[in-house]
Image (cartoon, rainbow, N blue to C red; front, side):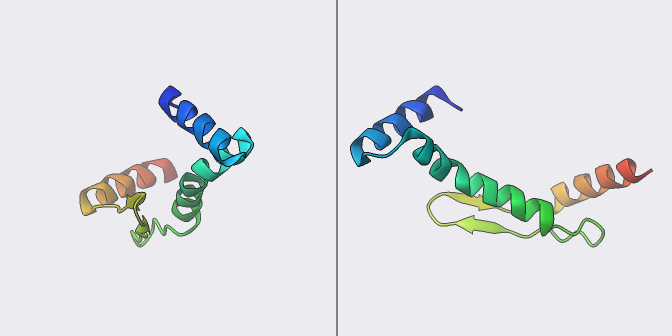
Length: 79
């Protein structure tokens, strides 16, 4: 984790009287959600990669050029 992020997490934890570990879990939650969606909602055979948007935080979209790259990599792994 980035040192600046750690400082921010510590500051937020102190201001809100929370444990640092709880604030870290909150910070990591959107990334964990993205990983779960990409792992279980993608269909590599039909090239379906869902978009994910968390307002004011994260937008994940797989462009067509990346789909082609991922499909090529997936086919090579299956061989």
